[in-house]
Length: 256
Image (tube, rainbow, N blue to C red; front, top):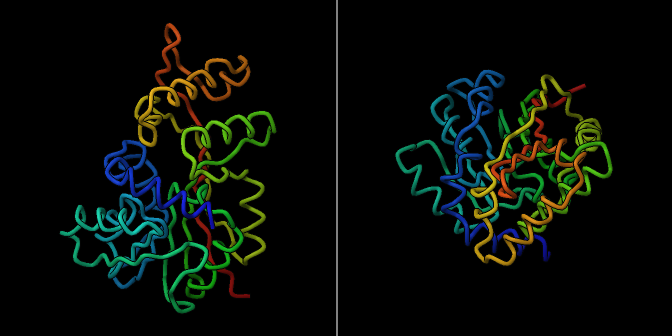
């Protein structure tokens, strides 16, 4: 599938950037994740699309075993080098929509800032349900699209411009329907505005000045309503930061 080839190409090229990215390496969600999941030392965790391995690293200190997966082999190999001191993290090249694991195998499944790269989110959620043990927990953290169609189109167009492997940031309603359709109850959730430092964000995936300028102009030429919604911070037409919507949800596999 062409979309998954794009993912592998982009993440192979930028594997170091996703380890050091402030957006991925830090964030209140990483500590909140531990509070929500209440992991135990006997638990087995699957981290889907681990990227720079930040979720796997944080959970490894609390559980028996973490299996960190990614569709991009070069990304996974690079992350394994950074996390080599964590002896209970294991690695597997895996497609989020076709996981190579037996059913009811994990106490916890996580996926952070990655699902907007998945072409078929319904297959991803179905796989999460399949590999979770009865009453197992699923933590999803991802960028979401606003309900307003204009803002939805803006942010997804912007993300695609800056990263060809971006598929779509889905809306809250879309995600909640997928949870319901695949027998996952939402236990806790929160939405927030996530501020992105513009230069770091745009240079994480782009290195040619013409395309970077095109991305910047797209933001600067948007209307004031859009700029206000996404909290675009500029000075003399230099973009410092902007903010996107993010959803963090803790689900549990229904057994009834």
